[in-house]
Every structure is written in structure tokens, then in C-alpha cells.
Length: 125
Image (tube, rainbow, N blue to C red; front, top):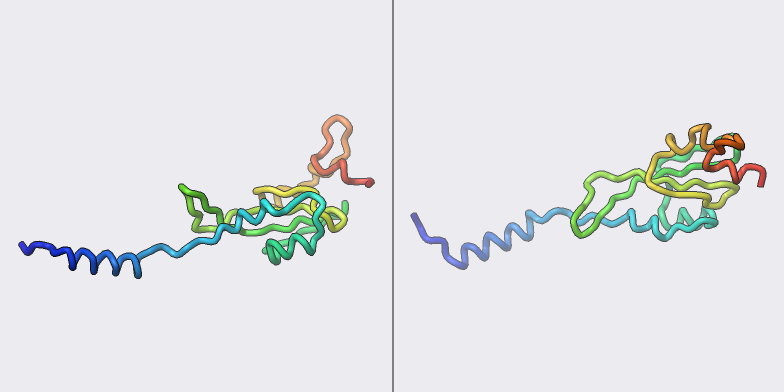
């Protein structure tokens, strides 16, 4: 069995570093921290770009859905996570980690005095 020399180890390490390193993921999800309630649609678009989907309803809400990569010291996503930005009258009303299909359910817009939907307070403003 041959002894492995330091130069062989160094050459192998250099090859693995150059060719075998994982691709760098951009922390797109951190862009969500720059979105604030009251921002305009144009301001959101300048930060996040075009949404992958956008849904509107008869109450005047539009939900923009984005696929963003998440990264931290201990985790790197390979697949985009789903984030939404809920817009009312062209301004941000809410945002979070969910899909527009879930956020645009009719129950979220009900004006029931006992169990109001989470977006009901905006209706009538």
C-alpha cells in the first residue's frame, strides 16, 4: 500500500473545493423582512420582483405569492418556501409564510361580529 503524500492530499482537497462545493443559495427569504405594512405594490415589487402567482377577490384584496429560498447558519433550503403578501387597495395589509390559496379563503373576509375573519377589519375602510 502506498503512502499518501501531503502534496496528493493538497491536490485532492483543492479539486474537491473547486468542483465539489455546493452552489451558494441566496437568502431571498430575508427580503421579506424589508416588507412593511402600508407599502405600495410597486415598493413590494422592487424588493421581491414579480410574484409567481397573484389572486384577487371581490372584497378588494390581492394576494401575491412568492417562492423564496431560506438560509441560516444551520439550514439551507434547496427548494423555495412559499411566502405571501396580502394587498388591500394597493397597499400591504399582511404578509407571511403561507400560500395565497390558504389566505384567500372566504372565511378570512367574513364580517361576523362573533368570529370576524382576519381581514374583515379592512372591509368598509
